[in-house]
Amino acid sequence: MNARERAAAAAPPTHPAVLRIETVSKAFGAVTAVDRVSLDIRPNEFFALLGPSGCGKTTLLRMLAGFETPTGGRILLDGQDISPLPPERRPLNLMFQSYALFPHMSVRANLAYGLEMERRPRAEITRRVDELLATTGLSALADRRPDQLSGGQKQRVALARALIKRPKVLLLDEPLGALDKKLREQMQLELKRLQHEVGITFVMVTHDQEEALVMADRMAILRDGRLLQCGTPQEVYETPVDRFVADFIGVMNFIEGAVDPGGVFRAPGLDVPLARPAGTGALAVRPEAVEVLAGPAAGMPGTVLDVAYHGLDRVLHVRTEAAPLLRVRVAARHAAEWRAGDAVSLRIEPAHCLFFPDPAP
Image (cartoon, rainbow, N blue to C red; front, side, top):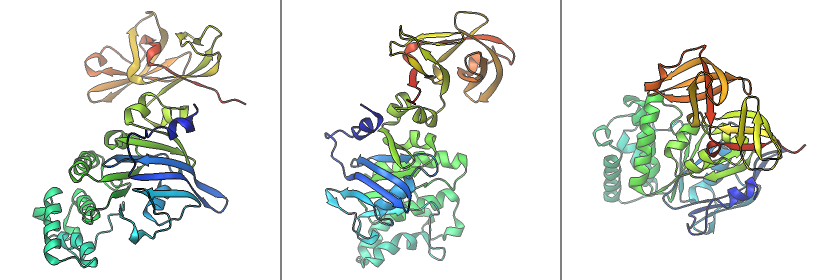
């Protein structure tokens, strides 16, 4: 099974889809921004569309919202094709990165606006606004205007306003991109908590792989408009389908070499039995899966270049004959053992390795 087939099979039929994307494409002239993407997104799921800039994730989100029309394929919501419907007729809502709050209105008025445009009864509007103010922790700020709020508070107001109309699916375009790192980390957990409380499917676009790992139930990795892999954060992190995904999600070491006819990967100073067909390629191993030993113990010899401080752990940067830089994660309590210039040996267990063969010429 190739990468495309594995990605298409990632949503088993035992989980019904609330939102189904069927071979959707979008071309702008000669440029194909989204290329035959198929995805099933499940009820009450936090789903992330992830990839580098220009991969097509925002274009795909805009097609879900109705701001772009697919060149090919269909978008189904609860089995109904919504591809021809304009944005205002879709039971979805989009939360923009800029928040787009009305600056002259209070928090309460910002939340009530969408319901007022639908001419809902005043008692219903008051009840639903009060409920959502309480859920999002905004009750004490209900009478403030946006310019009297912090960045995190504005983010919660924008989220509450997007939720007030009770969409079947909430679309989020880089929802935390305008926040500083510390507040961003706090709001990741807050957003996840709110998603569970309101019980609505969230589809989030982000280029931040750490953010997707923390927040998503499942994620889809896109590159050049194509879907590479879809799965849980653990599946994508531990079993990436190709070298690009392995390098994009988390930190990965790559060691160039070849598998010999006996199924052993060989590189200078390193032999790892893999029991796979012969050929050239790259051995991939995460920093936390490499064991570092002092001196010329059994393993791949190397020299510590630097020790990077990461709070609870440290990352050793090690030069070896097989690779100019390998990263090794060690617990802080052991970090004092290592200094720049130390001779070390690196031990790599086959069970912790992946192998990505070189592409065919």
